[in-house]
Length: 304
Ligand SMILES: Cc1ncc(COP(=O)(O)O)c(C=O)c1O
Image 1 (spheres, rainbow, N blue to C red):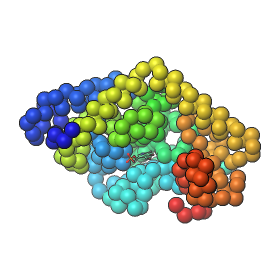
Image 2: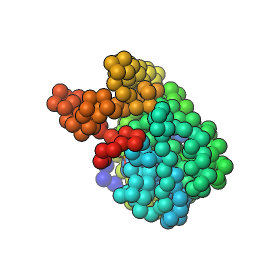
Image 3: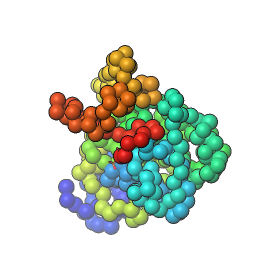
């Protein structure tokens, strides 16, 4: 689909969008129904762009963001120095507990009170346990911050109610449609209704150009599939597989970060378990057709 459709349904910068408008309205309707929210924007081309749009909507340059350190499982787009976020905003990090490698809400609270951020980010790239979004809401309220929850990885688990829903705690939620949601490569923003206008304008004309309507059609299909009972069964199997694998490693004395998994992923400390850094371990696994991602681990002494 090469038709240009800058703008939103019934408010396009081009003529000839009547079918495209219906496609986008359907995707928005299905996203809202699936995640039980009042507002969805299905135009972000990716998860990182969804996050950048949120920053543009809610922050001014040099405002403060508090997010999980990239080394501990955060994402580049949560404010790494080399990323848009780290260049335009003042980014501070919370970390995982050094012993349990789990989120420590008292430490996060202390850090938030010290930093007084305008935005707190929860939701991660490689954290394998459940997150208490209610606790994050309390902390955000105490310091007057917005709460962004990035569910890029766990959107499929949330859509099927196998993981706590970040609403009503979050102000904004971003996610990718291509991870556990098993859809096309793209991003979505969900938010409280009162932020709708700001986010729409930040996305277009603020940040992106024309919407990718072929992908938006595929997002509708993905939201439809995710609402079917078979998808929930599939997500249950994903969780069971990850749990079984983590428990097996633990039985063998392998160090699983955070002590196990409650999600679809697990992180292994290959260095202390096998004397291999992540790069070497990932390369060896590829030789036997097992593909995994290498990742920094909490308090890692290796380079990214
Ligand atoms: C938590 C989180 N947010 C955002 C993204 C970025 O998604 P994209 O690659 O679509 O920009 C990722 C990708 O791994 C992620 O893990």
